[in-house]
Image (cartoon, rainbow over the protein chains, first blue to last red):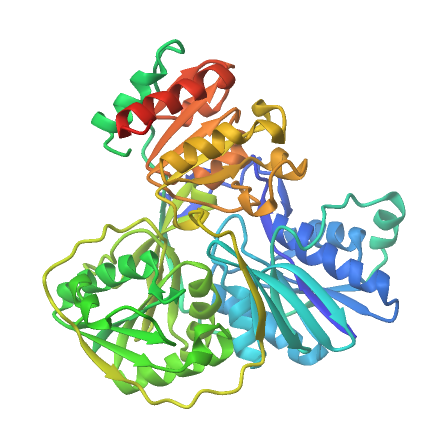
Length: 247
Length: 321
């Protein structure tokens, strides 16, 4: 059994979002970088749990990023995983990233590929589906629960207003969200062993991106809150009804 | 040459996010002088000709009950065949759960650039540039698509529905349906409640409510307003409410017309999931709660005193005893 988990580097959830270079670039100065929470808490931790259940499982991590991604991938290795592969490229185009991951996946012939449901910076929710299509594999998106029995999979995914439970077989691509696993903190043993785990750097294959970000914009600032006195909540209801016309 | 809109449906009905996608697709088609068409896979109980009111000239249906469930791989292959048969150049998906499963696959299959999470019509003055949400609602990116075929996944509740008195032509599609590799074994839906991602109004509770036993007033207010209920992360993590109600950076991102936050301080991670709401109301006893900075209306007060009074006022307004 071989599992591949896709890892992205994203700004910390509390990072200030600003742009430079005429609004063409994210202002990365002073920004703390983290493992994309969906990749870490749900995809990676669930994969680690599967490996803990079956010790013969091989768990690889893959990321597409420049050398400044190494601390993030080491942090992921501190949580678990046998080795990591970094494709040495920088891109915001989901298709470019998915193509690089699909190439790595083809060479490793993995049974199971996990991604987070989306990154918290570009919010594309696209890489998992694209990887699945490029590898011609079935895909379950936005999974909240995943169980494995031999090569049979039972997976629960979110649907509008509820959940659906599906059955599938390996090989499979799954995007993971809340419910899959609980957040873990790396321990000292993990951190020490991550230093010596293999981190292979491979050069990207030539792929033409399909999209390109031309500029960023910040949303207009809110006009400010209109406070209603606590002893007259009926006034709030009146405002929502007559002024905002929402209720 | 046409704009093709994927019509997602459930329980026999075309979803609201699909109606928005049709209106959006029709606006793109009007700009370029082409027709808008819809594609629906599976069976619905409603009259497809009536979808003409949302701007589609023609609706292609592949009437096959198997397709009332989703296998993204099978759907992608069918849609790709339809795209080439119809000659569609722009394909619009609702960026809902089905759209997120299919649109990326179709993008990779057709090598067609995808903008996932679009919030505005494309700007065609210089190429084809679509604005989308990035940084979890904290910013927008203008994304240029350079490929011949373009795919847009439109965020729910970001384009208004307009209707006209027109009927659509309905045509049967005949495309081979591959066997599903992902088989649905069970579906569970909270019946009678409004799905969170489709709700126009959301009433949400946080730690300020002190415990799950105090959710009665949240549910009562939500019911009165035909709203969905939601909660903050600590509430879901403490198992006061189910995980699927957690809105925020690591939960669900929503964009209702009205978001009412009760006893939620408004941590930046929570705001990331709700900041696309059109109007935000915050009720919190702490005047320093950061949420007030992002709010349109607010009450500084104790939820246990304020909310019952709001419920009374709503009942009076709606004439409910």
